[in-house]
Length: 173
Image 1: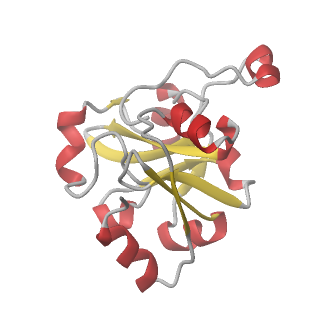
Image 2 (image 1 turned 120 degrees about the vertical axis):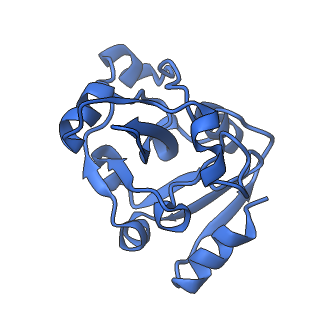
Image 3 (image 1 turned 90 degrees about the vertical axis):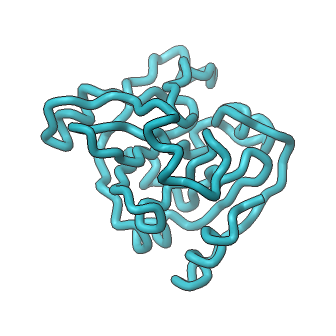
């Protein structure tokens, strides 16, 4: 179930959203499969430590985070995927691995891959492995004011054509 804090946050800011119950899905690609949508339609939150500052980096489910690009874009010396133990306390009402992209609610900065900004709607986990949330990208941008840039490793031609999921990027897929 989507935590009440997330639902209240969205209602308080008058952001319309849709909820989708689904079979338990731990990875973002499992979520895409459970909802019968392509991987590029699902946005996953990956927690990255950039010079020890946790960031929520939102990328398409079928992609992998490019840490070199994150370092360059954020202007930091180090960037790595956070271990669950390093971010679980930021999301006390969420299932581990189902972190939502709501940095304003959880006190973290948010960056989103520009490939998701062309989608009219975002579909993502919101604290649960059994329920997803969908909202308009414009509402998300107004709510979070994320940094929008390129944060993914290039997708190979073959994977682009056939939709083969890339290796999971770890942290909070």
